[in-house]
Image (cartoon, rainbow, N blue to C red; front, side, top):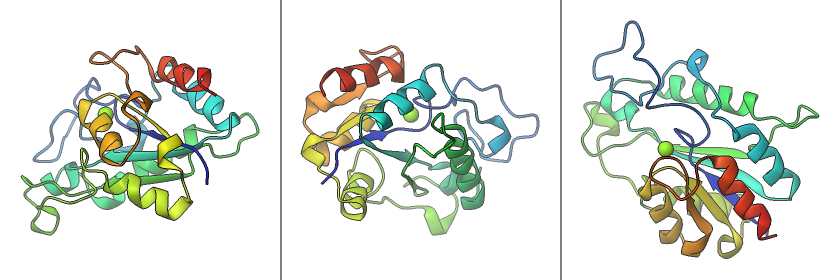
Length: 190
Ligand SMILES: [Mg+2]
């Protein structure tokens, strides 16, 4: 079984809430709803963090809540296009992809699109995405880590069975300024 670092996407790897509002946002749009792959921009240290973790042998898996689909401000296709762009930017020096898989959850209990308006076991802080990844990719959760920018990210990690000390919060609310600072904690443990 392999060790993994689960990575939140928005405001951990790519800029999100601080992006300026799009010129012509869809109805229901709110800051943080990212539906245009052209607007994807890696945060400082994100590429270096992913390269270091990948080179150290960790599987890298993105786990991201995308309730914007339930709110009608992005489509599944747009979320997947943004995810594809993130993967395209996160490559090793040899051009190989660093992110093994992206899990996202389009559901939200307070949505407007009936099909996606409900609670779902994949929606963080619930652990469903991590548990699915562990099954799909043969991951050892007890030896895996999580890096995110919101308390609910870390809660999802703990709920999946990761040791709390291996769930790291970066950004304004966290103990680590950037994802790279958090990645260095992971790498320091190896
Ligand atoms: Mg986030």
